[in-house]
Amino acid sequence: MSLQFNINASEVVHFTNKLEKLPRTALPNAVRGTLNSLAFDVKKDTMLKQSKRFINRDKNFFKANSRVEMARGNSVESMASKNGFLATGKTKNNKAVDELEQQEHGGKINDRSLIPLKSARVSKSGRRKVAPRNRLSRLNIRTVVKTSDAPGKTSAVRFRQTIIMVGKGGVFQSTWKGRNIVWRVNSLNRSSNGRFKLTALYSYKRGRTVNISRATHFMEKATAKTMLKANDIFEKEAKRQFEKHLA
Image (cartoon, rainbow, N blue to C red; front, side, top):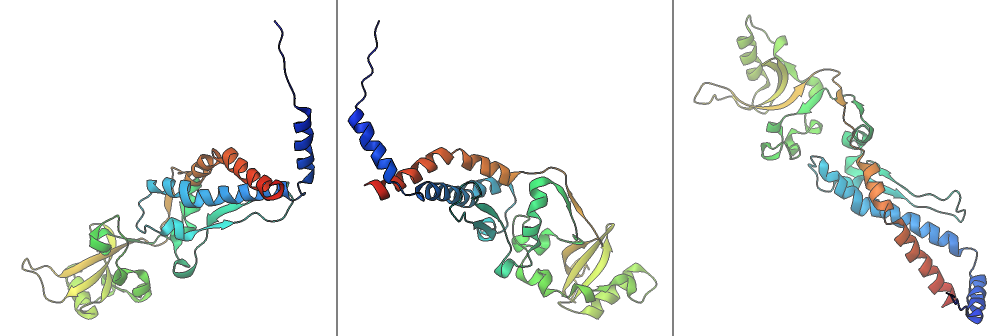
């Protein structure tokens, strides 16, 4: 059995001539475009999908705080694009951005002395953000009165004295069921059952750290998903260079 393989030599020569006309920047341009497209795909698609594993109290948090550092130059060997997180603008002091590394790799999150309770959040939901009036920026935590410093022979007396001293809208700290709680006084008038009208805002433990024992690797997984598209994206960028220079 014989096989015949026909080659149109004139077309091969014609295509070779076209390739020789490509500028030296064509390949770097295609590679650069591919790297940047991959980085933006992580930001706009796969990272957002992976972020759904978190309790996301701010729908725009991941999109607003992620940044792309685009690939530049013409050296293919050193060319790189990056995607990461950086707190800017209103989130400049947002610790959640800084803590994403611990969420990714595991480890300890320091300086969590104050943790907001559900009653401090919008609609008292653990999935919602802290209500504006209950945010630490609105509360002068450093000057919060402690019931243990109030006058009185019993804890009940010291508790009542503290509430009267800080007044309506005031904030104080007291031990409740074995935990230190920061409270707001809603009214000096008691409810029908004789209890003071208070809102528990934060649990407090000085120097507390939170251990992230189970790393999420959410960015690693997002990048792996995006890299499945790499061949198709490079083909698209390469075709763009051919159409631009050889049309």
